[in-house]
Amino acid sequence: MPFHEEELEAAEGTHLRSLTAAEAEGDERAVEAALRPRSLDEVVGQSRVRDQLGLVLEAARQRGRAPDHVLLSGPPGLGKTTLAMIIAHEMQSPLRLTSGPAITHAGDLAAILSGLNEGEVLFVDEIHRMSRPAEEMLYMAMEDFRVDVVIGKGPGATAIPLEIPPFTLVGATTRAGLLPGPLRDRFGFTAHLEFYEPADLDRILHRSAGLLGVDLTDEGSAEIASRSRGTPRIANRLLRRVRDYAQVRADGVVTVEVARSALDLYEVDELGLDRLDRAVLDVLCSRFGGGPVGVSTLAVAVGEERETVEEVAEPFLVRNGFLARTPRGRIATPAAWRHLGLTAPPTTEAGDATLFEDVPEQ
Ligand SMILES: Nc1ncnc2c1ncn2[C@@H]1O[C@H](COP(=O)(O)OP(=O)(O)OP(=O)(O)O)[C@@H](O)[C@H]1O
Ligand SMILES: [Mg+2]
Image (tube, rainbow, N blue to C red):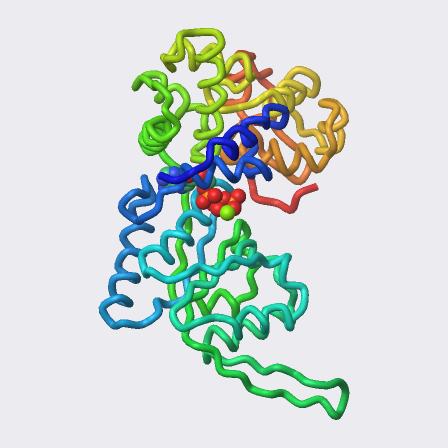
């Protein structure tokens, strides 16, 4: 697999930010490129998506046509970009890459679309962040393979129709709910990526270890998998940090003891909670009796910005049933108390199921 040592080296200098952030940061992308599966066969897990997508692509191949437009949705780090690249690879078509935020004017999109060749795959990452006029142009391009280029302004403006060769749009979004209906409806196939089971993460880790030349035992791999929050990107990142530890403090082999010591050192606990996650739960339980408490108060108490608590810590805590967002504030669930090794006071409202409704955040 072609990748450059020096890129890998550069990408290793990323120790300071949170190890459990699901988003990739600039220099992590080089390592990721090296670890990406290249074909559908190499994709681990997501079996439903893989089967469905395989069928869509095979049918298109048999008909000699560009496949239907594909929307990939799901949380960061689960394989959307990877699948987009695989679609192009499987169709033996070139891939053009762009992203919603990069398309600020309809004209930007018109330029991209008119430059496409027949059968090409156009990947629009973060498609929910495209501007409205560009979105409207995209509707027509997806449906009729045509765009109207408007020349001039005001009453004298004229729209000149421009034919576009048939292409496949692959859109990726972490926020499918933000996509306008008409755009969503124009995708022939939507793949929703799910968090991975530990067994799948385990296979991903073994594969990555092979590519990176890391000596990883089965137990070591299982230990990393269980702390990876269901996310391949995090699993691969933890593997690299554990590898550092194995190299410097042990004999290079990633055993279960090495994995445990390394991840304890990096403050990623058995369930994948990091320092901030635990601080939030700890403050909530120890200082506010389990809540309810407003998110701003919680943020001040852990010494973080409100946005960080809301966007970085809470989604994982809520998804895993440690914290609930209620109309009156945040509440620690019984699982949170248990995880911290604390006993919930008998009066805690955490036992009150009516508080667990999905409500607007406050
Ligand atoms: N099914 C999989 N099998 C093996 N590795 C995977 C799989 N899915 C993702 N990965 C690995 O996880 C990393 C992140 O995947 P990718 O960049 O495709 O995520 P993404 O969904 O596009 O994330 P983002 O929303 O941040 O753009 C890649 O390096 C890839 O190697
Ligand atoms: Mg991506």
